[in-house]
Amino acid sequence: MLDRRDFVKTCSAMGLTGTLLPGVLWAQAELQQAKEITKEMIDSAAAIADVPISDEYKQMMLTNLNRQVKGYEEIYKLKIPNSVAPALLFDPLLPGMTFDTVRKASRISNPRNLAVPENLEDLAFASLRDLAELLRTRKVSSLALTKMYLQRLKRYDPMLKFVITLTEDRALAQAKNADAEIAAGRYRGPLHGIPWGAKDLLATKGYRTTWGAGGFENQTLEEDAAVVKRLDDAGAVLVAKLTMGALALGDVWFGGVTRNPWNPNQGSSGSSAGPASATAAGCVTFSIGSETLGSIASPASRCGCTGLRPTFGLVPRTGAMTLSWSMDKLGPICRTVEDCALVLDAIYGPDGRDRTVHPAAFNWDADFDWRKLRIGCLTSDFEHPKLPQEPTKQEPAKTPEQQRKREEDKKRRESLRARIEYDRKYNDAALMKLRQMGVNLVALELPKFPYDALRIMLNAESAAAFDDLTRTGRDKLLTSQTDHDWPNSFRVSRFIPAVEYIQAARARTFVMQAMAKLFDEVDVIVAPTMGSDQLVITNLTGHPAVILPNGLRGPDAPKPPSDDPTDFQNAGGPGTTTSITFLGKLYGEAELLAFARAYQEATGFHLNHPKLGQ
Image 1 (cartoon, rainbow, N blue to C red):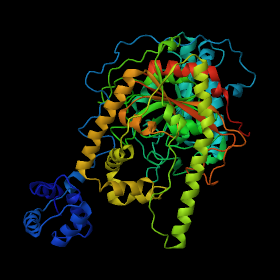
Image 2 (image 1 turned 90 degrees about the vertical axis):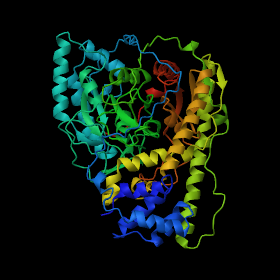
Image 3 (image 1 turned 180 degrees about the horizontal axis):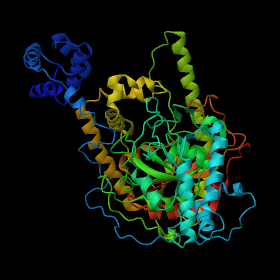
Image 4 (image 1 turned 90 degrees about the horizontal axis):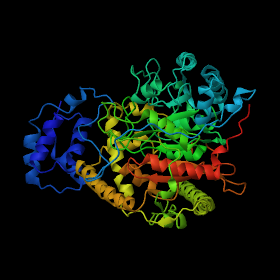
């Protein structure tokens, strides 16, 4: 067996480490089970890598390369699990940046005087804050709430497909314990006795953690994720492990497609598909999702929830599946902004294991005077949203299948353009409402960089995280196998040169510096959820975001291009939800959420909920 480490070392001696060449050569030699590397292999690899190599160097390389007898198999034999991070850390903070480290007691909103309905299901869509008060005053029991939500999960799962595993025994035991503690005067806080659901990338002892993926259906990780432990400590009641798109992509998982409660013919988007769907459907009080590049924002927008993507390095990811070490974030999906604040307060802060987490303080104050905040607005993105463009150059279609594909792609672009254009009136109404609230919106523009090119960092890291799937061929077990699904992406990512990954990381520093300048001018930025580069930018820079419901589309809304629930563009249409996004400073969640709550209270869109059949 060839030794890949020595192989690359030899390439390095020839000045070729920073190219695609060593990886391509190695793949050729390995695939062909070659006893030795030939000049023809070097020629093929050099053509892919676009690195000219003269014959004299080829012979010199062959002499050295063929001395090697061991391979990267030695590293493969280590069987590195997904939970092991590389010895590299991403830090969103630039030199000179600071954050508050002094923790203070949360100041939550004053309780409302709520009557307990005769039918407990009438509380299914109640906010965490309201349910917390009913539990604290013992007007409702945690056991009763837990049973109610379990019944709803069982009733609506056949339609919405948002459950992977009910944690019923665990939940009932936790609920009984919560009631006993509250009765004894040992109230732990606003999450005590509250039923919640976990995206199935969070390890939970005694239950399977499937990552939503074929081939992992029976995987068990005998530990509790840090977030699960912290919610246990807060007294919250875990009722279900909820669906996620396979390995955190989309809403297609090994059991089907998770649906949008507002239109069950659509997927719920992803990858936090189950958390958003179950929360929107009134089947859990809140849920925990994750985001690498839109996996909280997109399903929260699609399902009409309030989603918080915290600052990178605020919530520990220990015990959560890794997709990208430098971009993964965990956060709550709730009904209200304050609910997100209450959950964040329970889960944030260092755990001693996730080395990216800073000792930043999150001090929630429901009475914070948001009027003193400086509010920016991505004016040009609202006025001239980014729309899908026609390809600049295309060769004539050579087959009927190519022609059909082109017509289908054109239909999709037109549908997305129509949806973005239609939603402009909701964005305009949001800006008008903010001005009516007395907000002076400072016009800003996002810095210009090749953001799509920087996605190779996510692609490379995800391919490394699931390297074994690609090498063993087990990637064929994943449900979706289109050109934009992980199996194809992982294969393509093996051709990303190491130097280009580093260059993308260096360009990422430029983006971080440019965004820091924007946030020198303002405290919060108002942005469209769609039709802007903000989603890619802020996931690269680690800035927090809150996604809020912003109204329901009317009967005149353009219809989606297809009725296929697996089609990501099957979105929008009459009676579905729109959203708005607020962006905050690094570790500035307290101010961001205070402002977002003010807008939410002024509009009331979060009070809408889907009318599900019984």
